[in-house]
Length: 108
Image (cartoon, rainbow, N blue to C red; front, side, top):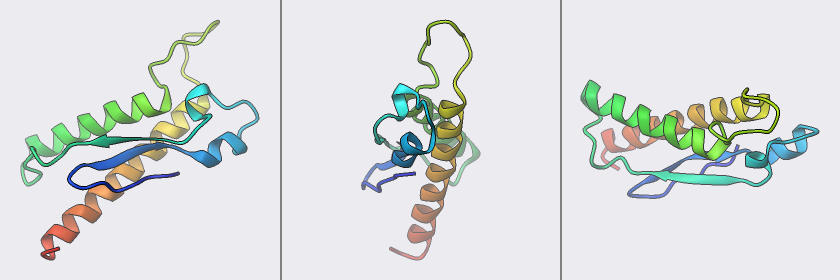
């Protein structure tokens, strides 16, 4: 999965470039790598409310990047590729959040 760190925002979500090669029929959202920056500096991540707000932003961005809300002809179900992309994107975003918080804690 491709992710990029952008300050002051972090790009948390990326459709995996390798996913297009890994699946025989990739979803349109997976056809190219995509990243979405999520602003977080307006949140107090030391509070449960701030953490929940960031989780909602990550979820929304992951859904958008991976095509979770796209409609497909002939089915109302989300493709397995989109679900896998979504899960991986959320894991990647949370890892980036943890790295940013750790860097901040250490004075970086």
